[in-house]
Image (cartoon, rainbow over all chains, first blue to last red; front, top):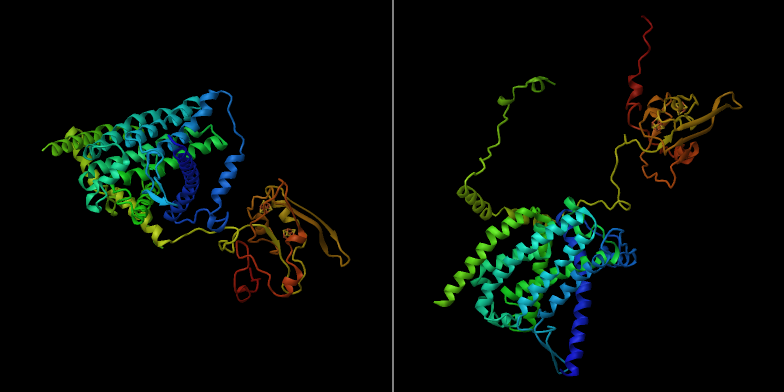
Length: 329
Length: 205
Ligand code: SF4
Ligand code: SF4
């Protein structure tokens, strides 16, 4: 392991941390604006031009608020839980190739922190660990709504994880590798080579599971404001609550990268156009998260479990079996 | 107006009908069919389409309040105003004290004295807007149409007591001179063309 490699990795880590922390903030701005437009409102308008500095105002507010640790909570777990959510979101991003490799000053940069050969498994696994944040935070909170939320987190956790794993299995069988770079190269031949054409069911299932993974609206039951206040976040204040927030939004961005790379060709042949195409696809999936939030109602926890175990999981298994049969003959 | 449509209680013949709701499936096959039907009916996409349509139309209804305000009706009962006579620009209030008496939240306090012309004059008059419930009784009882409600509703205060003085409520004399005093159009106000409708008091009872 030479020094250049170390420096490069550290720089990449710092860049990803900075870019996606900032994006998480800007993501909230987009979310407010898009939701507002869909509901015939204007959204934030007063802080800065068109409310653009609202993100900064929120940041200042979160950073300067008192960090309250309530009396009856299990303090060490309560304190560490938000860090789990935020940290695992960023740790998972290590195996995501954000852009095709490019050359700068005669030095070839791979915009992926670690091209591990178990990429997709690693990402799904670490993202799943992220659910320990709501789970532990909710259980440590000494608050009945937080406790309910933790119970729901556990239920969601065991439900979607099966679906996302099994639905990703069929494309993995076709590519024969777990590395996202290999996935990308497999589909590099153009739109006709995209896995979504041969695995439409897996694509839909993975997409649905992504909603459960990030806890976005149709499956927003872990922190459903109108039922259980803010769920696991009820007792949190200041930057600890902000870390949950950053984790959720960073997760949304990362999963919006993973879906196109898995199914929609990624960055294609690695040209500049392909890089922009990946960013465009990512933007679409992120927008879709906001879009559904404006359009769709939430499901109950039992409905989510019903959906995952009785509908999506059998479909995913059938899909895997059929893929296997087709590949054999 | 005919009352029949309100008195007719025969619901069934009035175009009412029971909504046609299918029975819930009881057996597994029926439930399965219902799930499949709901899955492929595409109702989720209808929702997506509706919000997307509204976003593209960009038909925003927000009123950015401190900069923009809704027009409010002339009958809106906000902060009180004291009017002047159109003929002489003199104050209309004759100090009769009826408004003080009727005010159900006891928030009007007034004092009167006899001025040099032997006329009753208001020497002090305050309304505690912190207690006023804007019921409009004072405006309604006033025999001179002197106290009325205006349209100024931004009367936030840092204290519970929030007094408004006679001088603040009175139409400024320059506004009066410019003929710009706005009459209250709500309950108790003079109806338009009142002069033409005045009749002599019939004395032949
Ligand atoms: S509006 Fe009602 S409560 Fe207010 S001052 Fe007049 S009579 Fe009293
Ligand atoms: S405002 Fe009207 S009711 Fe009140 S004292 Fe004056 S004339 Fe009488």
